[in-house]
Amino acid sequence: MPKLKTKSGAKKRFKITASGLIKAGVAGKRHRLISHNGKYIRQQRGTKVLNASDAKVVVKNYLPYGL
Image 1 (tube, rainbow, N blue to C red):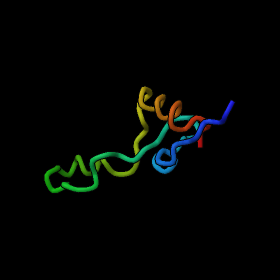
Image 2: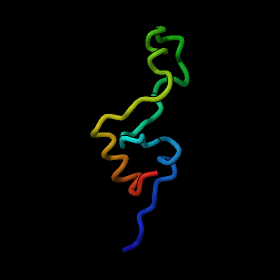
Image 3: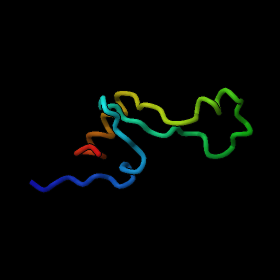
Image 4: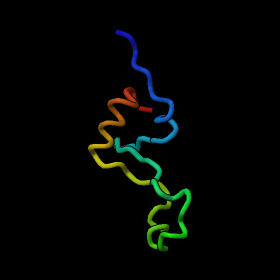
């Protein structure tokens, strides 16, 4: 069987934690922040853990062998 290729974009955008969860940067913090309130901007800092259904797609299709 041929090996599966890892998606290059996924390598750059996702990290796998030690417990196997998927970390990703938060969407919605690049521009147009003047129209959002301070609470929204604070909550968008850093990274978040993907929910289970999204993480399953990422691991299965984009990162078949992990990182």
